[in-house]
Length: 352
Ligand code: SAM
Ligand code: FES
Image 1 (tube, rainbow, N blue to C red):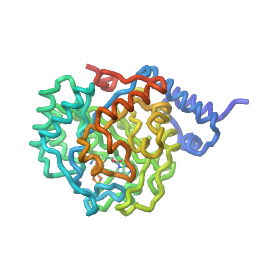
Image 2 (image 1 turned 180 degrees about the vertical axis):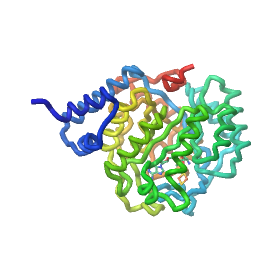
Image 3 (image 1 turned 90 degrees about the horizontal axis):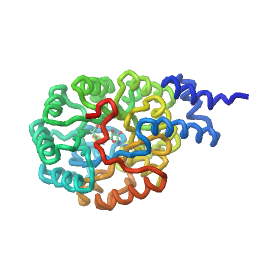
Image 4 (image 1 turned 90 degrees about the vertical axis):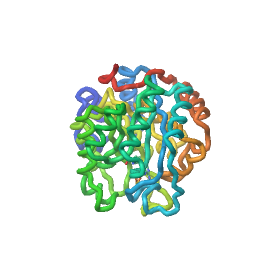
């Protein structure tokens, strides 16, 4: 007799499409052999494009000031207990120098939405990084900005931008954010970035309170229209000093299954096994790769500020130096039969 679950996996892989019922079945099926088959299909697809190579991105968390007040986020502006910091241009450049010496070819500048850094300052930082490290890619992850600002950053040399939509569903978005923020604006930013020419990364939180297969299906549908180059998903993890301090964490298993689904729907996308996944499960990042992910984002921020960029409780790798993180990740990756790529790791359609 034909196995319905296996047929579903084969159909998604073949057509790069799925129905809401298929998504529901993938998220609710508890058969271990089914899950193994889903992950095997996803890693097979990843291997066709990327072989067994994993791309590293050096994450520089350069400010934890934020004007936003997302209910789930540890660095939201209302969290008066957060110890705030900002890195200077020189400090950011020194993180890049250290990263380049360790073999990184991509730097991700991430921060809260911090108006202290004007467009001129951001452009200055980008051009300086590009001048010193012309073979490296600069990725920005600094939130919602006017299209004109995105254009200026792009013209200064930033090539990639990460902005998770968090959820594509407007009503669900409203339960996660204060009234001043909207899913519509966030999605518009993604379209603007795409139009300017960035390699665009979007994504969503898994297991936010009230999220069902309906909201997740909407995310998948939105992403099929956007066709992003990168997709970041991770479990929601509670932070003690936020309004969502007592909400249950998102599920690791759901995150892994969704990573596999994303790999089948977007064979060439860059999919990180996120720090949140590694925090929720000590083997989360390895499991993410074995479910179809192909990117890791170790922290290059100075050790002295790492503990202050606390989006959720228990975040891993806040104590180690960058070199230590790279060594540890390399070993973990090799243990599961993968290697770290030396190239910049552009999306295959953007390769120079
Ligand atoms: N300000 C930028 C932005 O809005 O895109 C980048 C920084 S923001 C902190 C980066 C990502 O952290 C968000 O897109 C969100 O999905 C994730 N994040 C925030 N709080 C989280 C939590 N409690 N659990 C898991 N991920 C979280
Ligand atoms: Fe701004 Fe989280 S509320 S980065």
